[in-house]
Structures are given as structure tokens and as C-alpha cells.
Length: 272
Length: 321
Image (tube, rainbow over all chains, first blue to last red; front, side, top):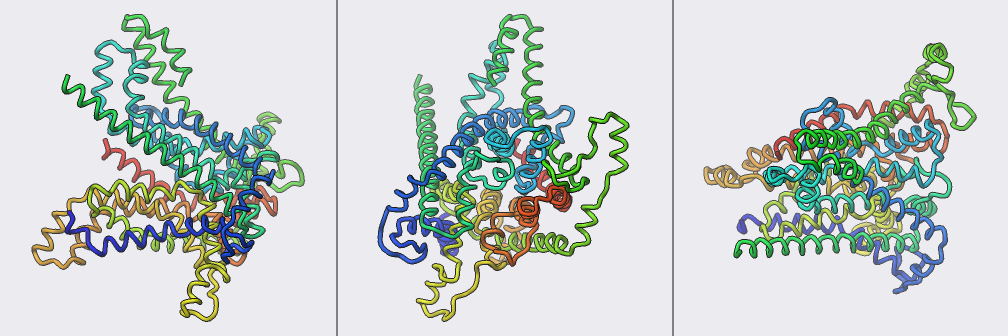
């Protein structure tokens, strides 16, 4: 294989990753800029981070975003996991085509359509727009991403394990919680994280479904970006990137440790 | 999920076969029904409401449209309302060239940027698939990582790079490649750059997964038999990666047509795209019926690509089994 890992391949990967990462790196670098101009370097400074913490509007928005993210990701993970089980296990029931359509379509649906349609639903049933409606909207569009992540794990799941447990007399629910759930747990965790970051990032759907008093961080950033690029926004973005990066790194380390633990357990079991 | 456990546990406790079977049937039904009803109520029904409101008139009230197909007056009122339904909003859309242009421009921009994303993404995916197996997971992680950072932030980062006094112009002028700053921000070029950049992981991931599964001894065989490398690529590698190409293109094309953030922040006021038109119609003009009509037509335009996407997904699911 090494012989085919040619200079062309290496070049295209290096250029590709430079393209992917350079804008983010520049954004982070200029958040430490002394100068008020975002594109002219005026020396190192952390003053924009200090002023960020004194910006009450931004702090409130961060708090709203965090709560919406945690609640919607948790509910979306439960619903998405159920949807994934339905898609992989129940191949025959009335309306299955419609169901799989409703799971896959939101993945590519333009956000303006999803946002507008949810808003009109909330108005039609007379829900006041605010924290609650943003959370409902985020549950709906993120649960489909969870379903796809969990489903890909369920497809490769060895069902003979479940059959063995049931043959030994375990009821289906117990089998699910003791056999199936531990195996698909990594996928469920990454599904939760994906749902959380999607909720954290969303501007369009939140703008439609939110009301007064429930301004999320992306909405706040967007309204400030429209007025002009400032180092303070760079600082806010950098913190957001850092939070997500730390989360992803912790999750991947935890995943790796679980993997190693499992291998050790298997070895121990084989030695008897 | 706790609900299921609580309701099902006492039923499944006795060893008798019948209660256990009943419990199983009950749990099965709940597993299907809960997500089904949720999606029905929050995904499908809203579209019907959008369609309904697209047939109503703008009114100065809250909500700002006249009621249509309301059951509050009973069946006769419903039927009376049915006769008054009108497609004025749709006629309005066809009369104003702005909307037609916005749809066509959006489709063209999405198509061009999908091609560009494919051209940029293919070499990356190919390089990753041919990389030593030990570093492939790391490369995969590096492609996924930007996906976790906010879409808005990644688009915002490009403003500082592309604007007239931005970093790109500073670099090019200090290298004496150009003497006048290039105008890139607030043009269609900036939209292309934004879409390619933001959607690149969506293209690379499906390409990579189909290229990684490929049997490279086929290419080696072709080359042994005297086929030039480029010929072998077009005759073997590319056709075999076609499922990945299709999936990647659909994942980029469909959302790009209705994209709002990129044309709004990078395209400026001079560029026209339908997602931005819908947003302005809704938030600036507060014309809910017309923005609903815009959404209905956008959905119709995208129905065929979305159906293709679902078929591709279902096929991949069958093969994964």
C-alpha cells in the first residue's frame, strides 16, 4: 500500500487540510489582536475576552444556547435511538416508507423551509414563541442525525447476542438494556454530541422559532456580524470552538479507553 | 425510554409465554409510534400548514394572514373557505421576475459549487483512501473536526480573509502579484468559496467510504496490462466510486440551493438566492403568505433530488446489512 501513497496524494491531503483549517486558525489568532481592526496585527492581547465577559447580552445568549442544547440533544437522542431501532429492526409495518422519508429528508432539507414550517406550526397551535419552541424545533431536526449515527452502528450489530440472551430467558426489555444498549452506547454518545453541536450552531431554525427573551448565541453573533467584524466576535467564536474541541477530544479519549478495556477483558476471558 | 421500561417490566415478569409476548408487542409498538408521531407532528404537518398559508392573504394582524380552511365555522364554513382559496401568491411569484431569477440563480450556483466541491474533495478523499491504514483514522477525524465547529463561524472567518483590506489581498499585494485589491467579498465568487469550504466534509466523507472499500488490485491489473494511470482512473476508480460521488453531490447540492447564511454574509446585497429572498420576505417584509409560497415552490423544485437522496440512503442501508 505504501508505494501507492504517492507525492500527489500527500500534496492533495496537505492542501486540502490547509484549506479546511487556515480560516479557523486565522480567526483564532486575530481574537488575540490588540488592534480593533480584525485584519491588522497590533500585538498580543486578551482584552477582547475580558470585554466579552462584561457583555451581558452575549452572556445571556450563551446561557440560553447551553440550556437549549442540553435539553434538545437529550430528548433528540432518545427519539433518534428509537427511530434507528425502528429503521433497522422493523422492516415491515404500515407507513415504513413514509417513516424513513421523514427521518432522511430533514438531513438535506434547506433550513429556511424547516424553520418557516415549524414557526407556522407553533403559530397555528397557539404556542408562544420562546425557549420552549426553539427546544422543540431543535429536537426535531437533530433527532434525525442521531437516528442515522445510531442506525449505522445497529446495522453491524451481531443479533445472535440478543437471541442468546432471550433464549436464556431474558425478557426483551432487559435484553435491550443489558446487551444491546452497552454495544451501541458509543454511537448514542456521539449522536448526543452531534445533536448538541448542531443545536449550538443553528442560526436559521432558531431565528424562525425563537421569540423575545430567547435569543441564542448564533442569533446574537449574527446580528453583531451584520454591523461589522470585530475582535470581540472572534473571541466569542474562539471560545465556542474551544468548548466543542474539548468535548470532541474527551469523547474520543473515552472511546479509546473503553475500546482498550474491552480488548483487555476479552484477553482475560480467553485466558480463563 | 423509562416509560417503556416501567410499563413493560411488570408484564414481562411472569414466565408464562403469553404475557411476555404481549409485552413484546406493546414495546415494539411504542418504539415505532413515539418517533413516528413526533416526526408526523413536527415535520410533516408543518409542511401542510405552509401550503395552507401560502393560499391565504396578507393581513395586518397577528398572525399576519387571513384564516383559511378553518373548521371553527363547521363543515359549511370550511367548504365556503375552500371556494375562496386562491393562488394569488403563486401568480404574484410568476409575475415578478425577481423570484424566478432567484430560483434559477440558486440552482445554477448550487450546481456549480457542487462541481467545484467534487473537484476539490475528490483528491482529498482519494489521498485519504490510499494512505497507510494506520493514519487513516486520524485523517478521517481531521476531516470531521471542522464539521463540529459552527457553520456561522466558518463563514464569518472568510469575511476577514476576502474583504478588500482583508488578509488575502494583503498577502497578494505584499507579494506584488496584484497592485489593486481584488473585489471578492459580496460577489458570486465569495459564495462559491463559502459553499465549497462549508460543505467539503459532506463531499469527502461519502467519497472516502466508497474509495476505501475499493479493490486496488483492479487498477494494478489494468496498469500491468498497459493502461495509462489516467485511463485506469477513468475506467476503473471513478466508476467504482460513483455511489460516493452521487451521495456527496446530493448532500452538497440540496442544502446549497436553499442556503441562507453564505449568500447573506459573503454575497452581500447584490447577489440573489432563494433562501435569502425567503428570509427577507419573512423578516423584512413580514409577508408570511408569500414566503410560504416561496417555500412550497422551493420544496417542489427539490423534491426530485431529495427522492434520489432517499433512494441512495435506503440502498446503502440494504448493503450495510
